[in-house]
Each structure stands twice: as C-alpha cells, then as structure tokens.
Amino acid sequence: MQQNDFSLTDILSTAMTIARGAGAILREGFETPRGPDVQFKSSAIDPVTEYDVRSEQYIVGELRKLFPSHPIVGEEGGAYRTEGAPSQVRNYLWHIDPLDGTVNFAHRFPMFCVSMGLLIDGVPSLGVVYNPATDEMFAAALGTGATRNGKPIHVSATPVLNRALVITGFSYDTHTSDSNMKNFLGFQRNAQATRRIGSAALNLCYTATGQLDGHWELKVKPHDIAAGIVLVREAGGTVTDFDGGDDILSTGRIVSSNGLIHGEMLEVLKAANDRG
Image 1 (cartoon, rainbow, N blue to C red):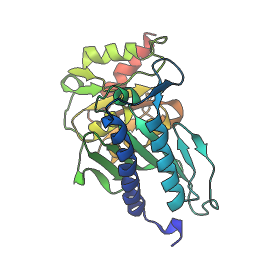
Image 2 (cartoon, rainbow, N blue to C red; image 1 turned 120 degrees about the horizontal axis):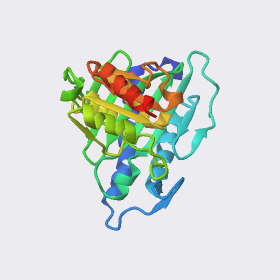
Image 3 (tube, rainbow, N blue to C red; image 1 turned 90 degrees about the horizontal axis):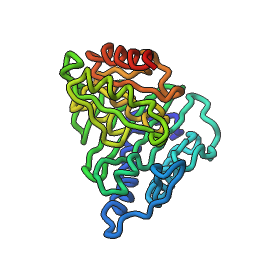
C-alpha cells in the first residue's frame, strides 16, 4: 500500500499507538525515584530532560518507518529530513511536542502530555494528545469528531463569559515580559474564573471536553497547538487568532472556546491590547 492510500482514520489510529509508546517513555521518567535530570534551554525556566529527547526520537523513528515522505518538525530536533520521495498527492507535515509541560513533569505534577498534530495542505487535520500520568488519550481527525479514551467529547454550553471557566499559559520569557498579564487581568475581571495548568495542548483538550469553556495564549509554537486545534474544532468549538481569523500557527496567538463566548473573549483581548 502506498502511504497516500492511508485514510485519515488509519493515520489517526497509528498516531495513537505511537503516542502511547512515547507516553510509556515519559511514564518511566515520571515514576523514577530520583526524578528526571533537568537542563535548560532559552532561560532558567525553560527546562528540557532526557525524556523530552527520548520521546521525540521514538516518535520520529516510528513516523519515518510508517510515513517516510511526511516531513516532521519536533520541539527538540527542529525540522527532520524527509526519508522518502516527496508526496505527490498532498502536503503532509507533522508537528510534534514529545513532552508538553516539562516543568510539570520535572516537578512530578501530572499535567503533561505527548502532542502530535498533522497538517495537510497547511490545514490542521489530525490531532493526538496523550497524558500518560492520567492515561487520557485525546484524538480527532477532520470530519470524524473528537474523543477521549474512545468516547465522544463536546465543548461546553456555557452561554456567557461571566459564567465561564477559562485558561491560559505564560511563555518562557515571563520573567522579562508581561505581555500576557494584561490579558490575564482582563479575563480575571470578566470571566467567572481563570486558570493555568502549564500545558497548551491540555488546555485545548479540556476546552474540547467542555471542562473548560475557553482558552487563550500567545507566543505558542505549532507543536504546542496543532493537535489541539483539531480537537476543539471537531468537538464543536471555535479556534481563531486574536483577531478572529485563521492566522494562528504563524502568529502564535490562539483563542479557543465553545463558540458561544468567543466574541466576548475577542473583545476582552482587544480591550486589553488597546490599553497597551
């Protein structure tokens, strides 16, 4: 079978299997008595562990075996060389985060995950997010709906922002930049409550399940959100950039919601940024 003969559901099933394999690697580090060895990348709050690297190596190796012409971009390794002949039918691109929530992982806080998103012709088309600590597998592909551990999920029905639970994250330059603090204060004043758990991928997953009503974040990378975008949209939600458009991956600014409160969320962000 040629790789272009694989259906999206075939690829989704394969990605789920790979994510579980990567999750087993992370679980090993999470459960080790001494804890993972931690080094730092861009700043003293931007950690990386051997398990980030091992997980990515495993995912990339499995994808290359099964889909050798699919380009891959990983958080740790960047763009990987294509092993096979370029696809002649569609433009595939994987965005991989082998461990989203490394700070949580290093502190043994069980909110971290493997995230695998597939873009087809530039469109987020498939997403798999797996948290090995809670054994939650989130999966979605265009036109198939979204699931958690095989059961359908759907966004919430919360109708207005002042009854909504929303969530965000802060970038690794938060010690030197307050670029999201004004947004945070805006939502703290307008939503019922605001949270942060330290994983953009899981923020999107719990928006898709309806446990959260909305999510916004800036300075995120495609590997943080490519999978989650598909999950929220397939669960019936809305995902845009801060201007209400679709320029999400290039701007690194994302707003996701149940759709009902999306307009109000955009208004809060506009007001916060208009104030400078």
